[in-house]
Image (cartoon, rainbow, N blue to C red; front, side, top):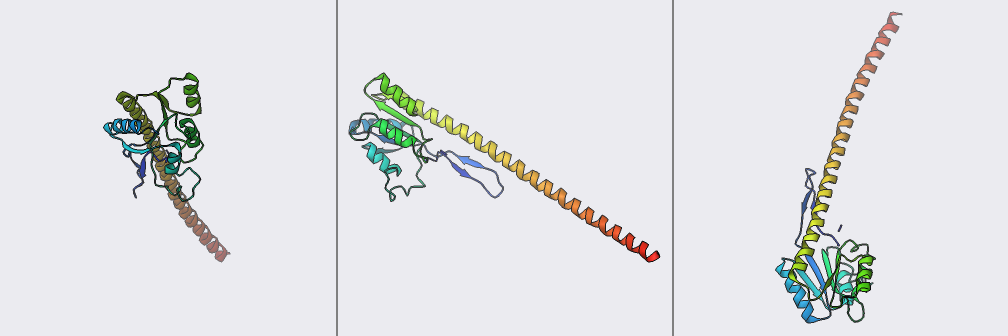
Length: 208
């Protein structure tokens, strides 16, 4: 997991897995300062942590995907959702989407595209490339809440999967311990039997 890390995992000494969903962190990308302020406000109202940048290029730099080795030293960066405008100078939202989906670190992070233009081929192109949704501007609070619920639901499913894997691991470890213990007991019994047979053989030899 999903920087793209989307949740923290803690494994105490006892071996039980504790999954703690973090605050939802959203990266918002838009070249319009007005639209950036609008989406930031809607996300904050929905209790999200928000980072805003003004271009696709700056988004790649923030994520460490611009090819700059110095900028990519962000292994602790956690982003749960990326929301980007489609029409931006230089790197478009579609180009940014493709870069993210080609990244091993961020390909599982949901990307939502925003646009003021309802152009069907463009929408289909983005969804085919892996966009989670395509929103028409102006983005409404209901849109943001719906997307947040979708992300949280996906995280909850991942939590269940992690717990299931943890329980399976514990069962395997317990079976290994039981098998090892049984093997040790069997070895002790075999050794005792061997010693007794050797002693009886020696006694028989002395009698002969």
